[in-house]
Amino acid sequence: MGQQGERYGWIALGDINGFFGLTFDNLAVLSFLAGTLTIGFNFPAEIVYKYMFPGTTFGVLFGDLLYSWMAFRVARRTGAREVTAMPLGLDTPSTIGIALTVLGPAFVALKQDGHTPESAAMNAWYIGMATMVMIGVLKVVLSFCGKWVQRVVPRAGLLGSIAGVGLCLIGFIPLVDIFGLPVVGMISLGLILYTLVARINLPKNIPGVLAAIVIGTASYHAYHLLGPGAQAATYAPPVWQFHFGFPVPTLDFINGIVPALKYLPIAIPFGILTVVGGINVTESARVAGDDYDSRHILLTEAVATLVAGICGGVAQSCPYIGHPAYKQMGCRSGYTILTGLFIGLGGIAGYVSFFVELIPRAVLAPIMVFVALEIVSQAFIHSPRSHIPAVTFAAFPTVARLVSIYLENPEIVPPDHFQHLLEKTGGALPETLVMVALGNGFILTGMLWGAFLAELIDHRLKVCSLYLVILGILAFFGIIHSFSPDASVYLPWLLTGPAREIPYQFAESYAVLAALVFALSFEKAVISRKDGGTSI
Image (cartoon, rainbow, N blue to C red):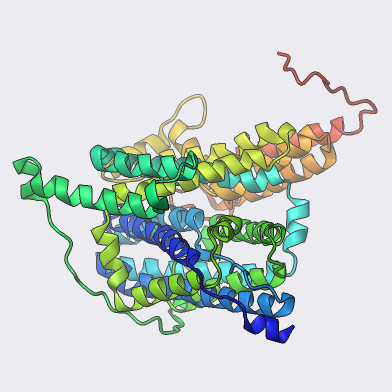
């Protein structure tokens, strides 16, 4: 058996296609991380490239090399020559979600408190590091009980909450970038939809992602160089500039732990979802023929996230759902080794930042749209048919968060007017205040909303009422539904003004509904419609 393992063909022709697919997927995530911060929040680019990128990409290098080593072990144990390594990369939903709801808002709040842009950016970086470390610790713990979490929380809650992120943050926002440069963006989008969604091969089996990136990028630069005079005059070619930064382990994350605690309602569900996703992708790999140990897969992604956070990273890594697709391509371990080295060393040497600036967001955005389509589709496909309403309901809080992101942007809504909207009086709670509250803690809210509705659909009324009680407790202290734009938690009896009504009224509403559902659970007969219809 050992001799058979020595003949493992760890690299094959398929690893070339796998390398391009996995590499550009990571580049797309890095591009949106950088673009969201530098363009959306005016974050200093130097801090993103020099401080955040090295540690973030080092986590990818660490995880991909460990997954490659695991493939060698599986080959040695089973005697197989065609073992495909588990793909690992930056988690798209949490990277974009944390950029939009943690790093960016923290940077804006720190500037409003009197920090210079550089000081605010550094402190936001500390918060991002601390968030990653906390997620990493959580994932290490959950790697030993991930299957229990998967059994306890209905899939509609787990997948529905992330479907909302896919629809609003990963899907809609990149669409704005695509139609910001419509000629270039639609070329790339069309090729992605043609090859990845419609599954039609390009001539000579050219990888669809590679074609979309190369043709889209070339079209962008040619269009601006050779296009109308106004476009050529404003076009600035990318500068070959290295942002060198070595991912040295540091304790600077300690400076961000206290302010990062208020972002835990966002961070914790992202960590849980990657653990559950890791269990699912391990099972899919086993079905495809590669028998990995789920605990080893989960521990590797957890440690990779922890290492990244300690070294300055602000995005967690996770195993990708595409293992069977990479196996079908003919990939072995070569593609993960090459991707890990290219991304990891690129973040250190700084050439990754050049590619991020060379390739316009409108060209990379279609990859995000494809990811969003997959996430939303999988949420409905892999949830019980009867739970489809719960999956949809779980996505609603992310819609509120998307609206809040734009409302809280001072370049869109002046701060004075935004504050007036929060305090606007009337017969009911101010609409803007409610929108902010519904959006804060949106991932955790969506997960619990989907869970309680799924339990209600299954007539598990006592469990449903328990979820409602949990929602009420979390809302009372602002862990979800915080009235504050910066999502801070609080002791509600210390609050003053109109905002004081939010924790009391929200908690009371959940408590009343929980009591009602619990009382109804004692009914001896539960009437259910068998025809699947709806009555009003």
